[in-house]
Length: 275
Image (tube, rainbow, N blue to C red):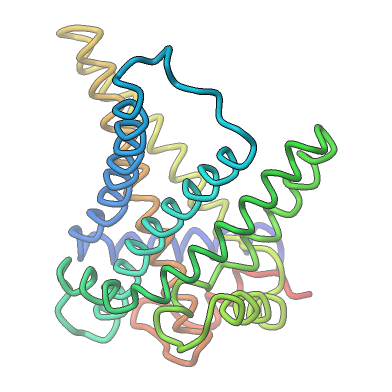
């Protein structure tokens, strides 16, 4: 199959995913909740530090190496936990939709809450890896940045199916990582053609929605235009993020032999280059 045929199939699948999203508009709330939760957690960290020094920025002590590593680890841990929690909620809601069952925000959140242990242990594992990679990057300079960049690509590919695996399969974080990597390596190759489609949708959304709202708001006041543009960009990001998570759910269910209404095996296969 040619490169352009692969892109065409990737675009078709993306459009099908957006159809699922249009039928379940409430699913967009999960990326929004994830972002809000991360901001609140970050704000709480800042509040604790500031309260500890009497709200005087000049009294904030220079952290030692051990303290810096601890805060870096906690930062990664919280980020992974929040993102995986809400991604799992979205994946479960998508699973319910594919099965023809009622889809509610409450059902997704309750399911993630029932898998809180698995989410925590995966977040611990991922945070440990992230912390180690960050320390290597800082100690090796530009060489470390190149190495970490390459490892980051491998990590993102290898962990592609981790969330649905820890959601529906009783395995630990290391086994989930291995199974996800093996699934990608043996069944699907190493490259996702759908990335171009989502990237293009993301870019067009930024330009059309963000730019359009800025122009409309600027008629009244440039500041209003900037605020509307930022809100538009955030909305586009939430939509694309939700669509990408739905894609993961759809592909996972096809791999595990549970075909869905809106996707078929041949179309999913075309998104990946065989090794």
